[in-house]
Image (cartoon, rainbow, N blue to C red; front, side, top):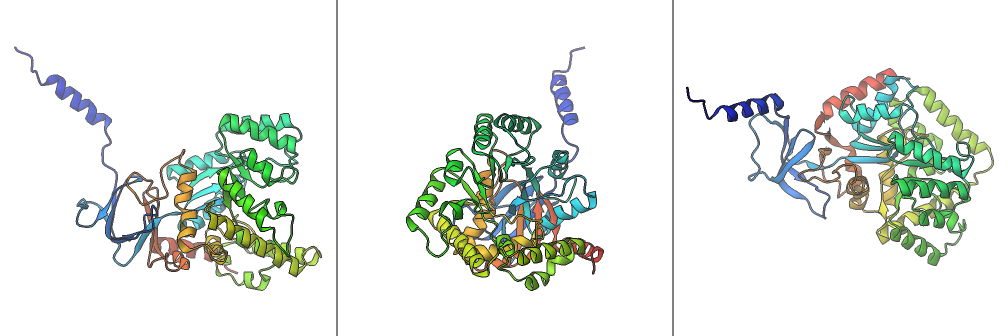
Length: 441
């Protein structure tokens, strides 16, 4: 009998069918939505955005993008779709905290449209949490984590600094966190080793190092606008404009990034009254013990005699001027708040931060860029995200109105998508209510 010439092809097709997924990834369609792609200054009217798996696969006018019959359709008429936001100086509770506490913090970020968190103080065992979160095992933003801190207590010699860098790079941390207390020799050993291994570092500027030298050594992020007030000589009554412009231009030339955390500094310098912060509605999502601790820390600083109101106000005003100068000159800014922190509730603190950034002269679009496109550019070696465009990670925020007209409108969202998983406002509000009930005073 003559062999069937189709057999090899049939066997090949059978083999491929066994290797292929049994079902295709879920498709979600945002239809007839106004898209804020964050690539240029534009709003795309009447568009459809298709998401398959964890990727955006199509963006185009509704008449040109067919919606699959089995797609989950999310109505966009009258709404605006933008990339999800980022918390670029956030904190994740350590693994010794109850799992429920960790998951609540991650959810609070997500509930406010934060789809990416750069955790800025790592703990042993936390890399497992990063993997679980990024797989989608938890309702969580995508996590990128700094390792345990480099500081004066953790590092006692240049050799130890080098060894610590090599260990954290081998363990797989996303970056190194710098705290105060390092000597210049220890810092330089850390920086040279990090640069040779290709692991980035950022955070504070140790006093012995100074802003200029940190920029020269390749520090990538300057969190809390750290080092700038000191580099300006601490002059609070008058500012050396020439020196400020030099520092701004050097920041841009060196390719550094600024993570302002402005609202928190107003808390730390006592320029926001305690009574105002105790009235924050979002405190219902944190334990009373945390609120009491924050209040006690505030009162302790107030009674220490170290914070003269006029001097504190001058420090905050100078920080605002520095941020405004950096923004006006085109320096790269990344949105961050340092939550959870004193009266900075995860996620909710971002909305307060955006208002302070606006007070420094940043436009709504500049503020949005700092939490979307700039973050995608910063993490371009890790993934593609930060814009509403085909091929980008499907991190999206659906808003009821246009935030380009008023940045506070970002708080009024209809839902959040993280890595292709959609969380409706109703789902988010239901879980927030459960957390609030747990901590009811």
